[in-house]
Length: 401
Image (cartoon, rainbow, N blue to C red; front, side):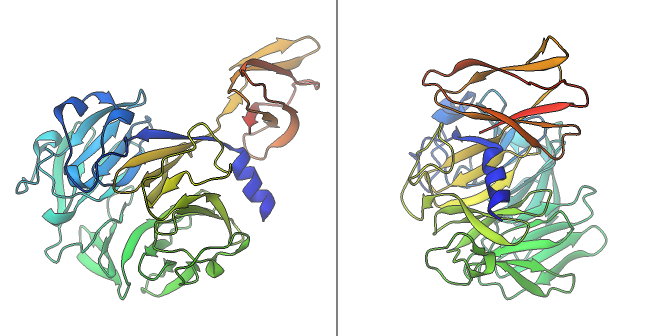
């Protein structure tokens, strides 16, 4: 469904960097001057996952600095949990005073509660909104390589990756194995229909897991070669697939770490190349550019997540970057708009240099109709567009690229 994919591309802005410099690799390179600094000036240490809350804070599981970092909406980075030293674990306390050991799994509720897969301490802990950390449970068998973590809204189910298996913890039943026999579990999530979905990095496939543990391949041919766009997702090579994130309509993104790319699987199960990258190196390119411009822009993507507002977060390689593709926000009536005679409406906005825009409208905010387009200019700056129709019945406008 190419039209669905094109609508997706039009709904997102350019690629940007949220955190990281790409300098540190596989070591704890935390320095005191990083605390409170601009996130794009901080050296990350093998980041494994990033997620956001509804307030716009982005949390990073920075494995080798033994911490969870937070980037606030102004781009300032602070330590959220951990002491940057892998000391023996403390059960609870203010989060920045409780040591973590190689955290590489993360789940953030929209309300701001942060759950941590504290890998070598063999526990899942949580940090409440008041900053206090407590242990939810421990798994004496350990997590293997860990990485995957998902928590229900009521905290009555926690799914997590544990080497070749996926396990569940419940307050009443404790720890049980949901499915086993995976080659190397990479990450997991729950889709909009309530199905558990897990990536198998070693098998190069993505599975839907039934309640009885049976697995169905939904993406990945099982090959480690180069993937093909525009084919059924089960026919596409996804070398060492790790990240997976679902849109509300059931379409989803997957991150192929050694393939180096981010892929979009549409609602009909057809896969499309969303963001091109490399399976090796320390590639950091494309800031300010649309995702579909030619050339490698990322390398070794290990996690992809969606913010509560639909922005795409991509966590890349051992040297450490967090990249974002921001969803374009609708212009709502009364915001960035001005009246025009005869009951019409004009839109006014600051354009990016060289960026052209499509104008769309909706009566409800769901189901958008194309109205017109505004070409880009080299300098960008303030642009205006006037709707030739009366505004009655229209409640939303949006700009797409």
